[in-house]
Figure 1 (cartoon, rainbow, N blue to C red):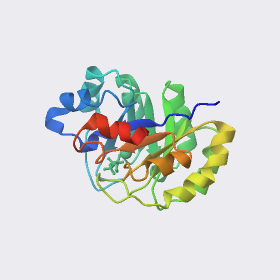
Figure 2: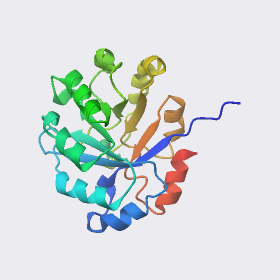
Figure 3: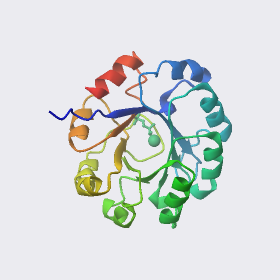
Figure 4: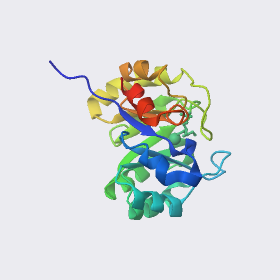
Length: 214
Ligand code: DX5
Ligand code: ZN
């Protein structure tokens, strides 16, 4: 019998207590990677953290780091992130006219390259890029803030992408409003990586991560 493939859980540090990042990270050991929401207050109406903080996160954990760039001109960020040593970088299709080139650049740096999509952007626009991506990040909230309501329109995008996933072997990641209420249907729809902020950081983190993996 083929064993059911386990979903990966990526807690979003956006929901962490930034004054206690080290102990927050220590409480996330059972997760598979740490999701870092980089916002520039231009692409999205919020500002989070940049290189110095990511560098210090890197020095304090061996967990894979997943940088989600919600920034204009994402091409200006990848060299520094490569030097710091993140394992995954995603950028938004809406933020660059050179997505194909940037995917190749990220991969040439030995980093897994992902393309991210806002809820209002059609998944069909990804078609020419799907042979090149290591993962696709589908936003199930409008980017910028944690704790928003999950938008079910992501399911249609998952159905559209699934045959391409089988063909090319990329991973599917969903980000926004993920909880124990929707994790099972998301995994059934083909999701490989669940990003969760609010849900993980309430109560017992380890238990919450385990609930997303059920
Ligand atoms: C939103 C971020 C998400 C966010 C998810 O722009 O990309 O990663 O932190 O948080 P929740 O799970 O609370 O929606
Ligand atoms: Zn994110």
